[in-house]
Structure formats: structure tokens, C-alpha cells
Length: 477
Image (cartoon, rainbow, N blue to C red):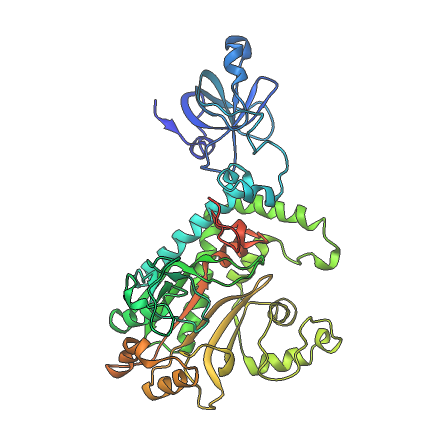
């Protein structure tokens, strides 16, 4: 008899057959009803034990968290809450779980407590649902690009360049921290380091992806990136995953089309394939919202929010138009915003982005043509000399979800921009080469995967959508 998963057994109509199942005990009630879960679904399967036929010492070991192997007959359920259940014939304890010390007891735990027990938190409904959704979204990302003719490339994790010009990077070194080799002026001599130069963990695979786009046409990266930003917030991680497509011969309009189509595709995938997990997370969110004051509650449920993105055309609005709307809107005039919009050139905050999406346009928004001085050096300068061909996609409840641009393909303009920002040409000589040998219009975007998982699961803290979060003062597990 081959072992089946809980998901397989619950989806079967066939009853009165002998089955075998392995999993972890969620609860054991009245010395009779075992709720068993194996991670294949959010639902447990009920295993009914006739305690008179089993050794009392064995049943005492059926505790929350224990791993067990059950065989028995799959029958139609008499009780509420499940269609089928297993009448247990044999019961074997594979691994005991001490109820005195096992942290994940069948009661409500705070997310903070569960972060401290991140190695066991997927034994709860919320985290098993979140991580199954993360897996499903990850698969949908690869599926979308594969079906649309993209090549998947692995960009380096260790790099000598700073793609964003942000400077907040983790240094990678093999030098002795207590006694590094020094130059005559007392500075560290990185020529003697492992790579013969200063190196860091990557903040983005974009620049390397551009080089491949300029030969393979359509590429994407999906891998870990790192920021040594000392931000202890619900939206920042020091290690996170980024999705970055780059496409040759594509302008900003094509880039917006690609990003919109991509977002709708991956979110449609989970609506079709993760119904039970989404329904559970939606109910969790509704219960959480009930504790908030009316004004802070979301107007849409979780599934409505996802459908809102899938079913609506994204509204395309220039930065200049958005600033006019924000400057003249009620919350700005009545000083309700934390950051008042006074003039063109302001960097938009999450509250402004959400106002545009949720209150003004009532659909996802793509803002484009941003002021050059608030965007990165590689974005293509417009004819006006003050804006760049950049675009950000704004979602309800979260603000910016995607950031991208048409890349600067003109060698002389790119050199000027690098000079103005003190980016040495010799550091990015290979990037400049792309503009010397067969340059062409090309574009791409970046999307922080955890932010997408937050949106899709309704989780309020980015630390709860990655298995083991890396944050300031915390590299546990």
C-alpha cells in the first residue's frame, strides 16, 4: 500500500479503500480524533481511533507535533468539517514530540514568537499557507518567462560593482580582520585580497543581465540580492530575492506592457491553483481587520485585491500629472499626508502612491517619466533633459511593486551621467562596451519577490514571507 498525501486523500471521492498516510499531529481530541497534517494542503485529515483496541501507552505518545504513520480505511465522514476520514487500523509513532517543551501548541501564537521559532513556524496554518503560496508564485514566475521566450540567467552574487550607486553593500573579503595588509597611507590593501580588489554581495543583477540581453535578446534573473541598509522596518530585509527581466529592442511602452502582463499572469496562477490557502489567509486578514479602527481597515478583501490587479487595466500617468493631482488633492491641502507635496521633483512616498491607486484612479497605476535626479544613472534621459524614461507600478495596499526603465543606450550621455555621479568609467568599462558595439534601445524592470508575496498573502511584515529573515542584529538559523 503506497502512502498518499493528505491533499490526495481529501480530493478523492473513492471511499471504503485501505490507505496509508504519514504526517504530524495537529491535535488529538477525546483520545479518539487525530487531526493529521503533512504540509501538502492547509487542511488536516481526521483519523478516528477506537481507543479500546490500542495500547494506552501508545496513545499517550500521540501528542501535538509528533510524526506518525497511520493505515486504515478511508470512509465518508460522519462529523462536520470534512468529507472523508480514516478509520485507523494501525498506528505507528515515527517521532515523539514532548508536549511540555514543543513550542507550537494548538493555540494562538504571536508572529513575533513564531519568528523566534522560524524553524517550526510552517507547522502552523498561516505559515504553511504563506510558504506554499511563495512556492507557487516562484513557479509562476519561471513559467511565465519560459513561455514567453526568455532565457534564465544566473548573475553573480559576488561583484565588484554597485549597480544602484547606493553604496550600502556587504563587503566580501578573505583578509584577516585583525591584521589586514595595509598600503603606505594606512588604508587596507585590497590587491592582496582573494579577488585582488574590493568586492561585495550584489544589490542587483541588472547590469549583468543587460549584457546578456544585448546578445540573447530576452533574459531574466531571479535570485538573492543584498542591502546593508540599517532599516529595521516591516518592509526591509538585508537579504531578499529579485526578479529582473531585460529585453533588447524594447522601449518604455513595451516595458510597461511586459510588466503589466507579467503581474497579471503570476497572480492569476495563484487564484487558480491556491484557492484554499488564499481563502484561509483572507479569513485571517478579516479577523485581524476587525481589531482595527474603521478608518484603518482595507476596503477590499485579500482575494478582491488580487482580482483588482488581474481584472483592471493599469492606468498610465506621467510623474508630472501625478504631482498635479497630489498637490491639489484634499489630504494634501488639509495637511493629512505625513509628507506634503509642494513642488515638482518631490520623491513620492507610499501614502501618495496608495492615494493615487486606491482613492483617485481606483485601479493599478504606472507612473512614468520621473525627474532624473531622483532616479539611477542608467535610466534613459528624455529630450527635456530633466526627466528619465523610468516607470513604477503602484498596487493597492502596498504602493510601489515594480520599478523599471528604458536603459540609456547612448555612450556619450551615459558617460556624462556617470561623471556627474562620480562613478569611475574603469569600474564599469564592460557596461560602457555595450554602448560601443551594437548599441540599441533596451529596457527592463526589477521586482522584489518578497513584496509580491506580501501582496499575495496579505501579510503585513516582510519577515513573515521569507523562510529565515535577515535583518539588522538578526541572522538566527
